[in-house]
Each structure stands twice: as structure tokens, then as C-alpha cells.
Amino acid sequence: MYLSTITISLRPSILDVQGKAVELGIHTLGMNTVSNVRIGKSIHMNVEASSEEEAKKITEEACKKLLANTVMEDFSFTVKKV
Amino acid sequence: MSLSKVKFGVVVFPGSNCDHDAYHAAKHVFHQDAEFLWHKDTDLKSSDVIILPGGFSYGDYLRTGAIARFSPIMNEVINFANNGGVVIGICNGFQVLCESGLLPGVLMRNESLLFSCKHVSLRVEHNESRFTSKHNAGDVISIPIAHGDGNYFAEPEIIRSLEDHQQVLFRYSDANGKITAEANPNGSINNIAGIMNKNKNVMGMMPHPERACESELGSSDGTKIFESIINSFVLQTV
Image 1 (cartoon, each protein chain N blue to C red):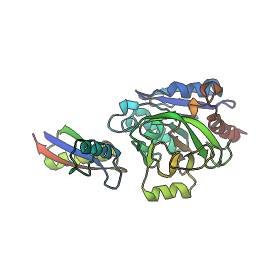
Image 2: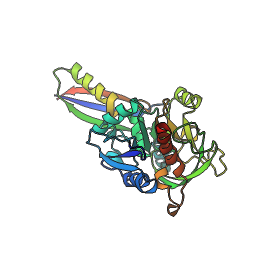
Image 3: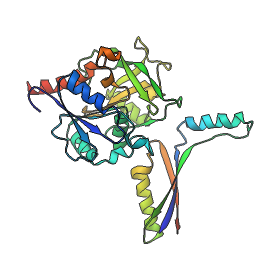
Image 4: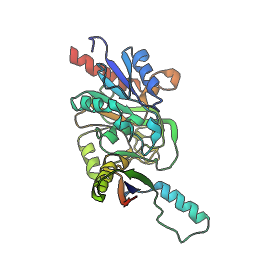
């Protein structure tokens, strides 16, 4: 069994309006050294696979077909044996 | 279809909430045949037109329309569309069409981050489509919107292709048909409110024409869109 940890974020070229709003909130706290806030999703899932390579393949397929919309999002992931 | 009536199949996903509005418009306002199609069905029941209605299919989980796109009925809808069948997606239905690849691009979170629920003015870009033939190019219509994710985005080359092929059917405008930033309720590129595919048989729009077909509802400006679609079948059978 493998644990896949996936991070999905808006592509850098796309204005992240949620990130901008949160950044404004952080600045309101007086934390003016914070910038470039980007909001994404974190997805964790167990994958039954016979090897790490197979687990990665399955995870990538899930990302491409459903978890991320590559028109606007990038994804990255790590796979760990559990 | 029968010779006299067009049959509208209205897909019902868990979370759809404009399915009855679409059914009502087709059946009671325009006196056509209409039937609901459950998302687990795999039969389009001889529908001539498929409507993917507004709502919050699957709770908008993950992304709007992302999970609905894998409903069993969608395989049939995609085959139907790829064989020239007429499919329209309204609001959440537009999002499902983009997720399924039947239309290009994606609907992102509104630039304002606010859910926007109001009547807006739309400029009809041209009438050379089965969705707008009853209009004149440049008509300005008042149609309600109700969405939080209506910010149309696609890569520049996709936008160029949409514009070059006259696939943009509706743009957010002011009451005089002028395309301005102030008239854009969600940040959509080029004020795009509705598009069709290159084959001109699939149309998606964020505003709700089915909610603007009777004067009692505040506007009947959505009627010509339905009449255009119905008329396109009548013309075929003459």
C-alpha cells in the first residue's frame, strides 16, 4: 500500500483571487512581510500497487483525469510506502 | 422526434436545481416534449436536445462540474454531441461541458470572490447559429445570472480560435450593448458569457435563459434562444 500526497495549485500565470484576498487579510494583521499568497488543494489517498512506480502511475492518471484541471491547475505529488 | 414537437431531455445530477426550470420552459412555455434523465441512466430516451441544467452537481466538490462529468449519462451525452446531437449547458451545465471537453476552457472563481445573483445585460454577437437565429446581431437581452464560478478562462490561442470562428455567442454588456469592464460580473476574458463548439451543436452559457421566458419572472428575453433551437428542428423537417 502506498500513500499519495497530491498538491494542486492554480498555474502561476493565473491570478489567484482567493490568494489575493487572504494576503490582504494577513497584511491587516500587520504581517506586511508576507506576499505572493497562493491557495491550492491537498489530497491524500491510499493506493494499492505492487511497486512505487505503479503507485505513481496510478496517482498521475487520477490527477490528469479528475483531480486537476490542467487548463488552470498544476499538480505535484509524492508517494510513500505505508 | 415527432414531426410537431422537439423533445428536450433534461439531465438531473444530484445537486441540480434548475432542472425543473428547464423542464418547465420546454414543456409548458414552449409546448414541446420534455423528460428528465437521471444521471445514472444510460439512455437519452430519444431526446432531440439535451439540457445540462444549473445547480451544484455533486456539491461542486473538487471543482464545479468535475465529478458530474463522470456520471454514466455523460458518456451518452458525449457520444450524442460527437455525433452532431444538440446539447446546451446552462450555468453548472456549462461548467460540466467544459470539464467534459465538449467545450474548451474552464469556469474559474468569480474575480470578486462573490456569488453573483442578478439580472445582467447580454449582447448577442451574431445570429448564425441554431441557438441565436431568432435574434439580430447586437440584440441586448436581460437574463439572470446566479453563480460563484463563472469566470471564463482559456489559453490565448483558444480564445483567438473562439473569436476567429465566431463561437462566442453572448457577451456581458451594458444596457446599450457596449462591452465594458463594469458590465463584466465575474472577470471572464473578453466578457464571454456563452460559447458554442466549432461544430455549432454544443452551447454553454452562464446566464439562465430558462429563468427568463415569462414576463412574470421579470424578463422574457430568454425566449428567442429556445425558439431558435426549436426552429432549427422545424426547418430540418420541412
